[in-house]
Length: 221
Image (cartoon, rainbow, N blue to C red; front, side, top):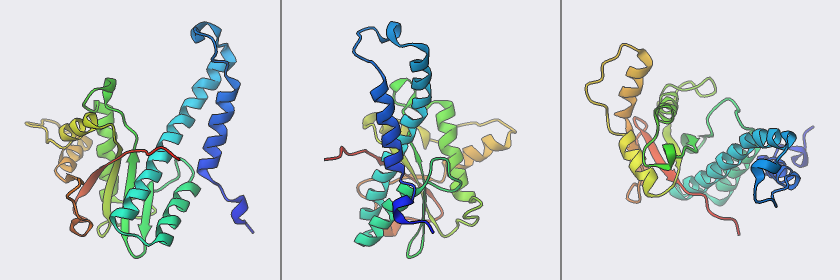
């Protein structure tokens, strides 16, 4: 029998990995390019995936907190959602957020920084977001029919850069000429993207659309 004490906790696991890695590095030198040895560089390469997982987890938790407030979840519902997020391992099959009880909500979280720290998503970044939108609409094995679900993509909030990148993302391409099915599907899904802003009401969200919501990570106190 699995006890709560033995259950996987994503925050604790990633915190341990990141802190262990940082403690092993000697970053006192002004020229780390010269002083880092092969083993340290390999550890740094491995740690990058953990850093991405930390960023995704923190963004997903921030999204969960926003979602709970936006839909006015009860305290126990909010705590349960955050608990589930923390117990879900990276790359688990399914959506980053799945709620199927009093509410029907599915969401994917993307920690994508506009290309070259600019104000637009690169082609691969844009495709990754649109492919997630397609999966939200089509469903996955765990939830094969999403027709009744509110669908949201959470995007890490970098201020005006993210605003500009989103505006370009949701602008349909003109005179598209392609026979590739995936490119046609991406072009069509753009028409279903809508942005959640400060004026959006939860009761007005429609399962026919896929909503984009900026999410900012707040510092822990």
